[in-house]
Length: 458
Image (cartoon, rainbow, N blue to C red):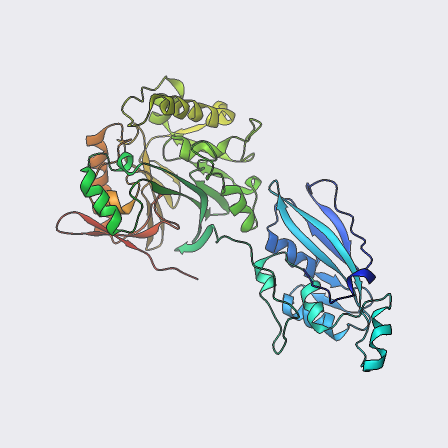
């Protein structure tokens, strides 16, 4: 937000009229001659970007007589405003997220006049004028104010801001783009879950587990697990691998939809959701809070053996090393999460091809029907290991078995078979619960395996 000099605030007449309700669908608002289109799917950056360039490609600032083409970036828009400042008026816009929607609130109308040299004797009377003169520095701060860190940190060359820019919003990106041959892939974080480390390394000696965690600079009393869903674009279809947890396993999940919006998509844009196994952290986002379909257009696919065990039957979860009340919630959350799709769920056998370029690999043991995924395009391959391992430090670098594996021996066999394949073929691997974005490779060692994180791509 622009900071006013002493004595100036009282001459600014606020015309703020906050919107009564969060935006739903499309709304058109006029910002000093700029038609601004916003949707409930826009991120803060996209919202602020539209304030500088309207949805139709023109940003007309009142009195400028000039339109900024859609190809202009924010800096060029600032320059355009600066060059016409003697006639321009702009609104200061504040945007923020509320209930997963974007609101825009016009804050002040700031008429701008050409700067004039004022002698020392004229200064007192000049400050009493009803119209506020805005200099170059304030134009840059107020033309498109505070909508995202990207804008707040942009300054024109040779310009010194009147006041320090407001701090950027706290947080980091929850999406990560890369390619698998011709297939566009994006890791979309659904947030975090976690629990006692002994749950995820069920056969680890207590003292050795604590030492390994300390050496890895990890807490010894809590292990954090990521929720790395993957969005693929295959032959014009958007395919989401894993739905994520939502809030079925704690308050730090459910970020998938924010991260979809951050890349310009909404749940309606998803054509298919493929589930590796039906635990709550993989199906929790299928259901909306009011019981509807979170992905209204999507076909949902799940392994047949898991569907029979967890949904059609009453699963015995006594093998899970968790309190009985947790098991009860766990089972109930599975059935509740998949209920909106229960009538038309498409079931697959592990090993089946889902689409050209996307194949499942049998990996039962953790659950009766769990599958890994293989994405292939040309000579490029990506292996998704689902819950064969929870965390590389305890399940790859060390051979400790995850406690929630229903069939410990079958799970261990699947883990060795698939990890050996990944190491032999030097595949890129995505771990659903590995530290974001979860990409790396598995190296075969004399004593087992080692995890080698992939280098970050900008």
